[in-house]
Length: 460
Ligand code: 5GP
Ligand code: SF4
Ligand code: MG
Image (cartoon, rainbow, N blue to C red; front, side):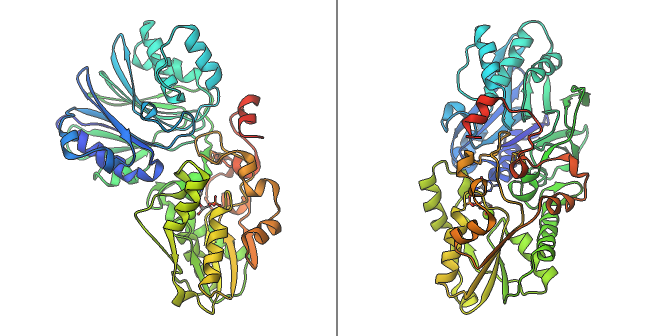
């Protein structure tokens, strides 16, 4: 999901939030929502589909405010329905709170039972709503917003990057492992006005300047007095999702002081060094495989070419919920360039193979277009384990690399040769401490313990 928040009295926060969400559209395409605050009054509007489908000028103009919270969703818990769209708005003794969540809790069963025991009226089925209710409960028992939120966070296990609007101020918070990203930006002018967004591309679009990340286990509290920071977790340990770096986040977003485009190019260079092969051209699977393909070409000296053209108006295939939709989605999406491919030995680079569906279709399309050899190189390791922290990678049996060797996968998708990047290559290329990442979908090493029943729900 994508989350966004802005505290900027005097600005058109509603429209700025709309544009912020527009830039975060790739993080979720099922539903979109905005809540604006005018003192204690909250205007909420949400709907199914893309940000540009849900909102229009007239809707936005009826939602005035000094502060706003926005969300784009793809579902990992709770079904794809408008009641599950966010922000989740909950009433408390101090007024309403509006919460936007990115990530996935792993202790929802326990949390839900506890909340129901105490007569909470859960409206929907999402973990995000439970966080909102947990905060409301603390506030109603006498805590202020900050203490109430911190107490609620201690009840949550899993991944949560949150933006929470309250009548008293805007909150941004990350779980102790900082699995999902969250950044702080500043809007020019005086006094300073703050913006929160899942990625820096959500700041760029509204002309806000990147200040810093919200740290793992940190809560930032933005009011008229500026930004205050609280380190609410005693044991924060950075475990940023490596899939954000490889695939999920936009290539123009900045992580560790560089755009992800640069990181992804380095992955391609590493891949060329580790798994070289002779060929006539290197192509990438648009869009996510392109930076690594360029890096591969640079390191190998083999010409980079465009071999597949993507219809830019079709969304990311993996976000559509069913396999049938996914398959038809892929046909809609990519068209091979016959003139480029005919008679050529082709190296094709993609960022990942998850189910193998995309790859099989692409390889067939390349051969149909006249490629004489097809060598696939993947700029991440084999995906062997499902994610429980907010990336929708299905059950383990759906992951082609969970049960099959690289050679078997190569045969299944119909390539001449197949090679993946190593886990070390992927982590080393970050230039950061390799312990600072979650890479559980590649090695099963889950940084936050997963209850057995939850594990079983994804067949591991
Ligand atoms: P698949 O092998 O599942 O058919 O698709 C892999 C391709 O789709 C890659 O190009 C990758 O960018 C994208 N993709 C599809 N599903 C997912 C997913 O669940 N997670 C990630 N990270 N990428 C996916
Ligand atoms: Fe990211 Fe994979 Fe960890 Fe999930 S399991 S948070 S996708 S690295
Ligand atoms: Mg892709």
